[in-house]
Every structure is written in structure tokens, then in C-alpha cells.
Amino acid sequence: MRLLKYADGEGFRLTEDLKAGIPSYAILSHRWGPDTDEVSYKDIVDRVGDAKVGYKKLEFCAKQARRNGLQHFWVDTCCIDKSDPIEVQISINSMFRWYRDATRCYVYLSDVSVAHEQKPHGDPSEAPWMSAFRESRWFTRGWTLQELLAPASVEFFSNNGQRLGDKKSLGQQIHEITGIGIPALRSNQLSQFDVEERFRWAEKRETKYEEDWAYCLLGIFGVFIVPNYGKGKDYAIRQLRREIDELSERPGRPQNQPNPSIIIPFGRDEDFVKRPALLSQISQKCGRPGSRTAIIGLGGVGYIDPSGAHKG
Image (cartoon, rainbow, N blue to C red; front, side):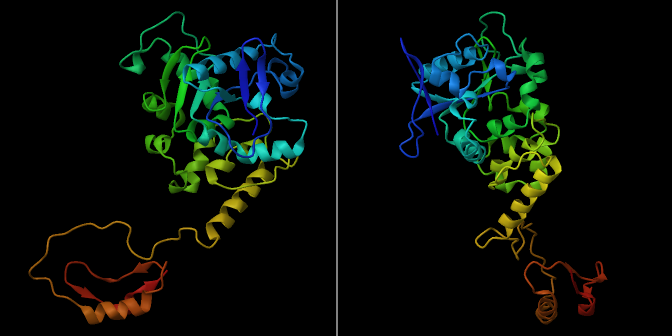
């Protein structure tokens, strides 16, 4: 992982590729413009690129990080050497972790403007920029899903650097825009959410390369894949689902619990008649962990036929 650092008189400089001893850092989340507008790894190495539109985002990130007491920050456009396929592969599989481990994540919304300095609104839904916030294309991109969910601290900024709020204060609005439940927005354990629910979070999002629709979800499912571009979205999704299935079957992974996961308390009934012998018969028939049981009997008369107990 390379990090950027800004020094007065020297401009932006990259660290070496850090394997250990990574300092605290901020991380930028944004929607890419045309490739020619973004500052690349080569631009930083060659000390050019300051005339590009995307240079403004680097300046914003450096300034905001400095305000938060951070010297280092990470921006995907220029911290990855995209001419190196191995580095790209490693980066795709590491991206979720890099966002998760960041001290701060700054979301730069290039399509949200705040005309002048404004005091924060007690109710964000009444803010004059809220309509543009709800329509921001940042919420439609595939890669920004993990950038929203992975970090503990996610702050939103307008295109002139004004802070709009964070993932907590804007949680209700983000939920309404994305359809992602507030518990998921605040969770650091996405594995507790159903696989299909996590897929639904991404179903309306788009990526530049069709295979990236699957690859941008790797961290959300906690799997690793060797990216294979050129085979299409369906192939990439099959890759992803295969890894998810294999992960769920590995030893040590949580399995379905044989005991009830929800206990509903009832008051004790003085007239209740225990049937230990009958329960023992049912247990022998249907006691295999993970099986489903249907018990046949006339409701309300206290009669159960053990021959009607079936394993599913």
C-alpha cells in the first residue's frame, strides 16, 4: 500500500509500497471523471498533473487530512500503479481492508455544491443541498458501496470542501437513497447480513468494466478472487458466488445452530402435562442437527401423533 503525503514546496509525494508499519491515514472516496482528468500514479512520479481537474481532489484530501492531524492519505487514482497487473490484482482484493483501516474516509461529491458558508442544519433533510445529495451519482457507482460500508468514519463533503455530515448524521437519508438498512450502515460485521441482502445493496449500481460489478463486492463478502477481465459480468458473478459458497463450507465457519435462535417466554401453566416419553420418541426421529421438523396433531387438545413427525 502506497500513501500520499503533501509537503510545502515539494508537492505530493508517494511513500514506498508499505507492507508493515503503515501510519494512520485518511482515504478518499469519489466518483471518477474521465481518465484524462484524473491524476495518475505516473503523474505523481513525474511531478506533473497539477493542471488536471482531478488535482483539486488531491488538494482537498490533503487539506482535510491535515485538519484532522493526519499527514498521509490514500487516493485510488494515483496510489496504484495500474500498469502493473499484479499490483492491480492485489489492490482489488485489498481495497475493502484499506478503507476499513483508514482513520477517516472523506467522500468528495463532485456534483453537490454549497454556494456559501452555511451553518449545519439540525435536520439534514431541510438543508438546501439535500436534493443534490440525494441525486448524487456517487450513490450509483459499484466501488463506492464498500467505501460507504467499510470505514467506521465516513464524512461527506461538497465539491468546494464544505462538510455536509457523516454516515451517522445522514444515516436516514443514506438508507432512503440506497435501500441499505441503518444497522448495516453502522455495522462492522457485514457477515451477519444475508448473502442475498448484500447482493441487493449493489443491484442498481454500475461499474465502468462489467466484471467489476462482482469484483467490487469481494470485501463485502470476505472472499478473494483473481480478477479475470474479458469474460463478462455473469462469469465474474459465478466466480464470486462459488467463492462465497466455498467460504461458508470451510471448517470453523459458523453453521446453522441446531438449537432455536429465538426464545419466546410464556408463563407457566399449572395444568400443563409433560410428555417426556413422547418427546423422546420425536427426538429420536428428528434429532439430526440442521433438520426441519413438522409435528402433526390436533391443535388445542394436547394430542400429538409421533408417527406424524417428519424430517425435512
